Image 1 (tube, rainbow, N blue to C red):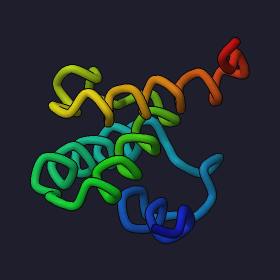
Image 2: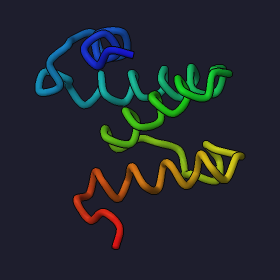
Image 3: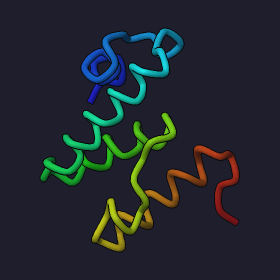
Length: 86
């Protein structure tokens, strides 16, 4: 998944600074629908990480039934926050 492509697909622009609050909400809603329909683990994870970075990701328990995927998402959250492990 290419970030610019995903931003254009869901928000109509490749520039995150140009996304208006209404466009953000509408795009996140479309992402949630696609996330719910997506069956490929890698694509689901990629969609979740983008939603997380934009402040609209579903809770881990809802998003990932598999514990390994939840752990990977927690690791991503740690990296994104700059805290890391250990």
